Length: 139
Image (tube, rainbow, N blue to C red; front, side):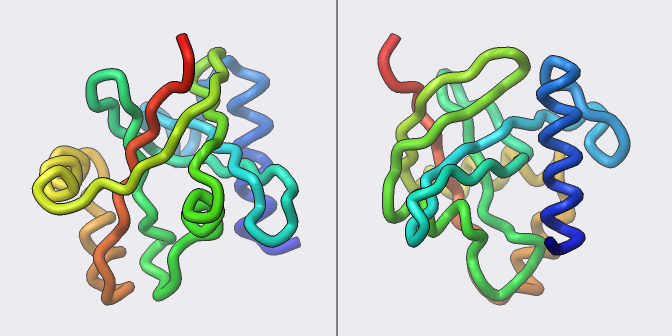
């Protein structure tokens, strides 16, 4: 298991055991857990992600730490846009949609003050960072 996967597992465990509060590098950062269905495996895949609230939607950013490729969770959402999120102590289903054009630019600009390193990630990756809006399913 890679170091990155081990770190994610520790963050997931801390998130779940402390009602959605995570310390260390994530202290005070809005964090959610996104569980997608693996595009190839069909298995659930959970990833901790920082997010932006946009009205009733949660918005996540496929920065992948500045890597040239998109993150696995993004590929999984392209294959199946339904997922599950955990925010605080609440968990529910969501539908994912790619934000494009002016909406993408607005959401990106709103997120950058909280995570200015996303701009560096985008530059290093040499690709626009996909912005994904998650809308709660059902009520």
